[in-house]
View 1: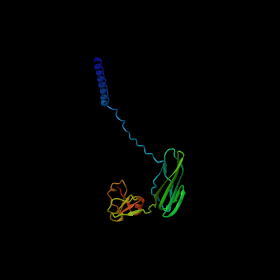
View 2: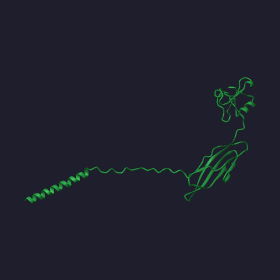
View 3: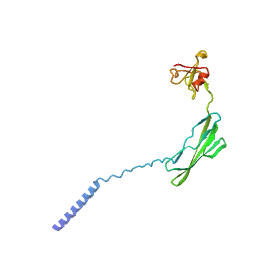
View 4: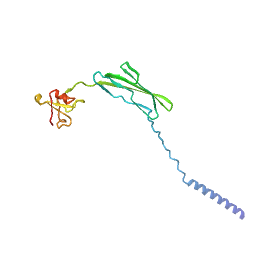
Length: 201
């Protein structure tokens, strides 16, 4: 009888120990899951970038020289850089390293062939180019109601009474900013030739 009781107590004790171990395992804090890290790949700069073509200004019958304009990344080898130019439906130049253009509006396609890590590629860009003639006018007539002269004509001509009272004002002079000119000139020499004299202040 005593042996049976002892065995029963031993089984109960073992069961209690196993149960308490399982409970502890369940209650124990679980290791936090590794935080997910979002990695954004850095945006790669292009191997070759074709630059914007700005408006060109020429004097008289002169022509503007147009060449391929571009920038490149390190380790990029340029194989060729050429331009194709058209005016309206007419092709003005084909596969040229440079071209001279008279005043007018053109379509310019720049083509750059390059090599990077043994691979040869080509990048192209078509842009509108305006070649304009520089103004030959030495003065611009104004209405005397506005203070601003057109771009390229900074000298203000102010008329009061006879032409003996006509004065011109230069930037930086006392009355320049408040003067409402009747005529604006490219240079002081042009104003003097038109009958104006220099303002003393």
